[in-house]
Image (cartoon, rainbow, N blue to C red):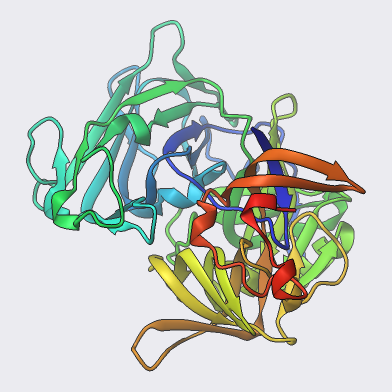
Length: 470
C-alpha cells in the first residue's frame, strides 16, 4: 500500500487524532523586534531578572475520535525545593482532534530561573465533547458515560477534573537559565489513555450503549517533537522588517481572551507564504503587508524550531480574517459532496467570529461563488471556487446563517477558502504521463464510501472513481 501527500482538487486531507502535550521552555537568541509604528523591545529585553521563558506546545496523534474537546485548567512546574509554579494563565478549551500532526504553542510565560523536577497537568471533563468514529457522522459519548478509570465514576462536576503528575529523573531535570529557554516535552497519549466500549462501533450503535473509560498516561522528555510543524497563534505586537520577524502576544487555539500567555518572536524568510484577509503574499512583501494591518491583529503561523539556533521560523503566516475565530465566521472540514456552488462539508469544526466557542459539526452546507477568494497551501498562482472538489480538506470563511430546518450554514461568497494539504492512502495501480492511479482506501482519513463524487468530472463518466482514483 502506498501513502501519498495529496494537494488540492480531488485529493485533500483530514486530521486523525490522539494527542500529545509538549512543553518547551525557551528559545535563546530570539531576534529583537521593533514596533509596528516604531519603538523597540523583545521578550528577552523585557524579561525580569533571574527568569527565563516557559513555552508550552500541545499536539496529538492519530486515534479513533472525531472530536475530543475539553479544558486544560492548569499546567504547573515543580521546582527542586517543592514550589509549584503555574504556567497556564487561565483555562484553555482545547479541541485535541484538530491537533493531529501539529503542535500548538499554548504559553510562553516567564518563570524564575532554576531547576524543575516535576510537572502536573489538570484537565476538566465538565462540558467535554467527545465524538467517536462510527464510520459515518460520528457518535457523541454521553457525559454520564465518560468514566474515571480509577473510580469508575462519571467525570462530571464536582468530580470532573483529573490531575496528571510526572516526576523527572534526578539525572534529567528541566533547567531554565537566566534569560534563557529550556525544552521539555510532555506526552499525554490519547489512545493509551482512553478505552472505548464496545470495541466495534458502527452507525447502528446507540450512543447510550457506548462508554469511555479514561486512565490517563503521562510521559515526558527534554526535547520537543521535531517531526511536526508548530503553530504560533497570537495578537500582533510588533514587526521588525529589517530582522524579518514579528512578535505576538500568544493567544492559543481560538482563544478570544487577553490572558497573559507570554510573547513569542516569529522569524520569517524569503519563502514564507502569507495569507492576510484572504490575499496571498510571499516573503518581504507579506511581512510589510502584515505590519500595515497594525498591532492587535490576530495571527497564526506554522513553522519549525531550529535546534541549533533555537529560533522559530514560519513557513506560512495567516492573519486577520484568514484566522479562524478572528474577523469572520469559519468552518474547517472535508468536502463530502458538491452541488453547484453548495459544498457539503463534513467532520467539521465551526467557529463564530470573536468567540472561542468552537463546535464539532457532522455536516454543514457552505455556499461559495466566483467572488470567494481562494488560496492553496504551498502554491502560488490564481485559484477559484471551481478548484474546490469532493475530498478537499479546507478552511472556509464567511457569515453564518440558518436553513429552513434551523441548521447552521455558512455563506463564503464574499469570504475566502484555504485549500489544505492532506494525505491520501491507496493501492498503486499505474502511472502514466505524470498521473498516478490508485485504488483509493482512505481520503482525508475517511473511507471513500462516504464521499459523493458526482460532478467531479466533465461528465458522469469522468467523475472520480475510488476503484481507479487519479
